[in-house]
Image 1 (cartoon, rainbow, N blue to C red):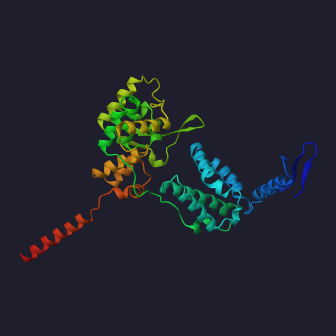
Image 2 (cartoon, rainbow, N blue to C red):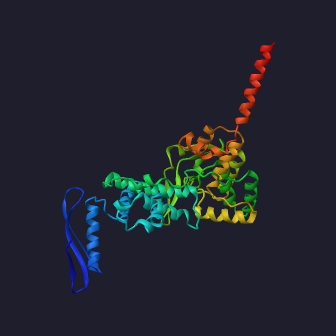
Image 3 (cartoon, rainbow, N blue to C red):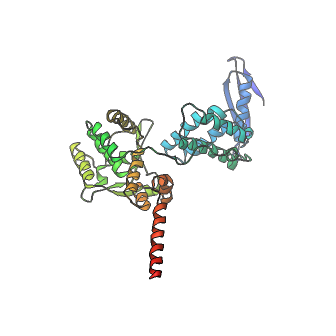
Length: 361
């Protein structure tokens, strides 16, 4: 690896040829290194990536992985992925050659996260672990890494939390009274609690999405904010596109609100707030009302819990929430369904007794 010193500038540079992934031979020059070792290391890493070598560092692999993701993900999804990798993966793995990362290395990383005083939720730990595994799968598929060490190390966290924080109707009403001084908050949180829509779906709503005669709202898009820019994006999944029936009181509430703010563009956002506003109001309302603090997303879970308690079918709940399939609903909320085994046993006993009595005449 020949590198050269710029005597005038007192720095080092490297200049070399390489063959890119298309088979074309190219020259690469990089200047400004403080030491000879830094220049040599840059050349080694560059050639490792160019030749798809599995002895590249984890940090270099992440650069390739994120470049691939950039063209396939929504901007907000990409930013969230980048933040997770930068904060939870790179501090531990950055300089390790990927072919030296073993299941034991993964296990050590997992244990550090499990012992973190911040106390990450089981679902978040699962998300972090899945991200690490996805990066190694990328290396296996495209860069000749022999195996994914995450698979052998075992999983971490749980896909669905055993318990989720939800509000009862009584708790929600106490909260709403606490934020009643802000009309937008009253309408927004009533919509979230009584429809189960996602916050991004709500913030993308326009006046045109509501049919106040039929008492329905059409969900067809999603709001996100990326680099201080408001974005209106396609819905999360195909099934997220749906029409939700509203109770008349809620339909009337939205109609009066849209009239009060003098909507000039029916196709513009009805709620100009951001997710930060929702979070701030959630915290404020919980403090003022004394109800337990939950996440904004937990209002969606609270709605599902309410429907389950009232005996509605999983199929209806899946349609109302915009789940991709009924399995998602059952996996997420199975622990909320009442245990009916004793009722089944009692019914069988009743049928058997009636049959026996009929036989005896």
